[in-house]
Length: 104
Length: 209
Image (cartoon, rainbow over all chains, first blue to last red; front, top):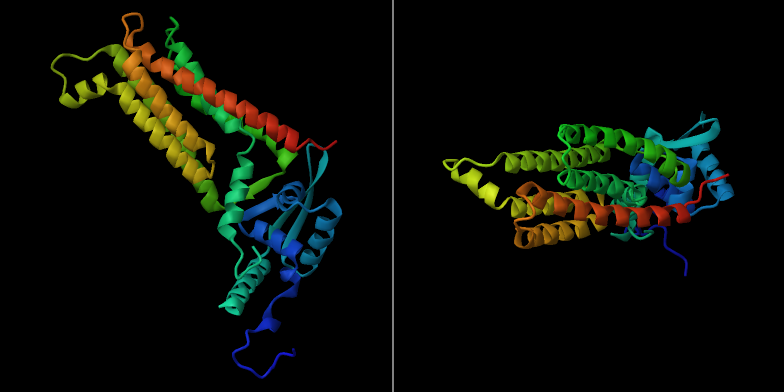
C-alpha cells in the first residue's frame, strides 16, 4: 500500500532524523543526553555495543557535530571522553518531539 | 524505548544505579557504623575522632571509586542536577554520623531530673528515635540515588533499633552501648551486603588488560 503524500493528517515522517533514529546511535545519544559526559568504556558497558560498533557510530555522530570526542591519557592509558554538543542536544530534542508527534 | 518517546528517566535511573552497583557506598557507611558501634564498647577516650571519620571516609571513597569503579565500569560525569542530588545524599550521611555521635554523647552525659520534657523523652526513647531517623534517611537516600537495596537498610535499621530498645536494656549494657550495638549490627549487615555487591561487580566488569 502506497502512502498518500498529500494527506495532511500524515505525520511528518521525513522530519525524523535518520542519523539518530538508528537504534545503536539512539542509545548512545540517550545515554549522553542524561549525563554531562562519559568515557568510551562506560558507554560500551551501558549500551552493550562492541568496541568496533561503538567506535563507528561514534565517528558518524561526531562527523554530524552531535557529539564531541576528547582523547587524553589517564594513568598513562588512552581515554576517550564523549559528550553531547549543543547541536546534538537540540537534534535529540527535535527527534523526540517528532517521534512524539508521529505517534500522537 | 523505541516507541513514541525515549524513556530518559529510565536511562538516567540506570546510569545512577550502575554507578552505585559496586557496593562501595554500603561498605563505607557500614564500616563507619561498625567502627562507631564497636567504639562504644571500648575505653577509648578520644571520641572526637568519630567527627573526622566521615570526612576521611569521603576521601577514601572517592579514591576507591577511582581505583575500582572507573577502570571497570568507565567514567561518567553526571549533570549538575544529579551531582546536586548526590551532594544532598552526602549531607544526609554526615547528618546520620553527627546525630549518632551527638545522641551518644548526650546519652552518656546523663539527663538532669528537671530537664525539659523533650530532652527526657529523647533520652528515654533514643533508640526508637534513632531507628526512625535511620529508616527515613535510608529511604530518602534510596529514592535520591535510585538504589533499591537502601530501602532494605531502612527496614533493617528500624527492626534492629526497635529490637535494641526492647532487648538491650540489661544491667550489663550501659545506655551508650545499647546504642552502639544496633549501629554495629547494621554496619556488619551493610559491609556484608556491600562486599557481596563488590564481588559481583568485579566479576561482571573485569578490568581491561
